[in-house]
Image (tube, rainbow, N blue to C red):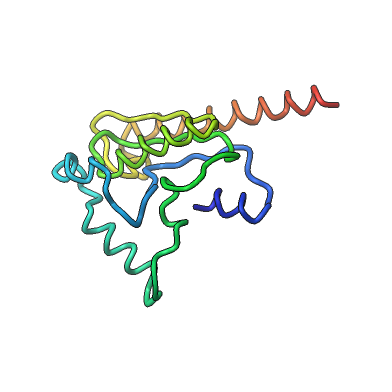
Length: 157
């Protein structure tokens, strides 16, 4: 949502973005994993996400803004994305569909799906080696993008 808003306003976009268990469609909540992972994600559910959107929107009247559903918006022109999700989380379908839509829009997308992990497992880095590795992958992604940006700048000088 933030990247699309920045692009639409003509603001400068970051060189890249890392999305952890992204809510790519807060309006429809129709990803297949809401059902298939309902029993394996201790941190998320369709019902919880319905409550989140209701709290987030408060007493907003009318149809919800399209920006709440980036999955159904034009993603062209966004920077490279690293998307991480667990294969046990209800947002897995959002992550997979967002990666697919991003690639179709011509942006570079790296999707990492972690085995036996749930929504925002990276928050457990103090206890989970997988979370530590995922955070390390984020650092590697950022370094790679920064190196590519520096190399590109040097070539244009």
